[in-house]
Length: 160
Image (cartoon, rainbow, N blue to C red; front, side, top):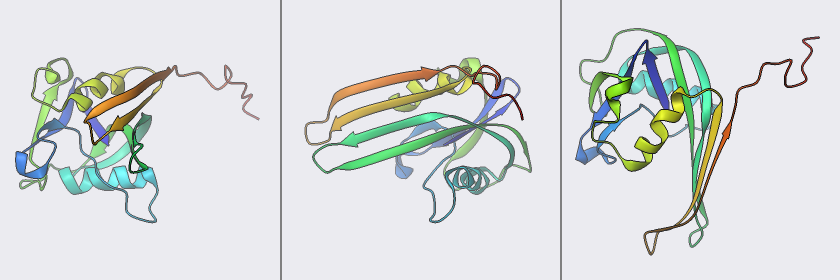
């Protein structure tokens, strides 16, 4: 998933019910083998919006594990603050809308995206994890971790 930011606004897709995950959401999708995770995020933005991402920053991971099936679903989240191109006139995933960041959470969106939305704009990275029992439609365990950004010298990097 890649949130595209232009100043105080973000670009969201208003997905119809027929596409699944209805409501407002950032561009994103599956990674095609053998492309890298970040290349997949950049490609998905281009395919869904027409924009070509120039600067992209990793913001965090959200994962869900289903113990009965043994499946793990991982979403790598990025923030793009520089891009070029024009928005598609007929976007494949739904209507494209520039929304003020402060107004975005007032829009209809999936609970998981609403929970994740503010984390794109915080300093540092996040990790959200849940164990979800699909059969009983119940979250068994949730973990949220936040990692503040550190300057290279704070992380022990001397630059040489």
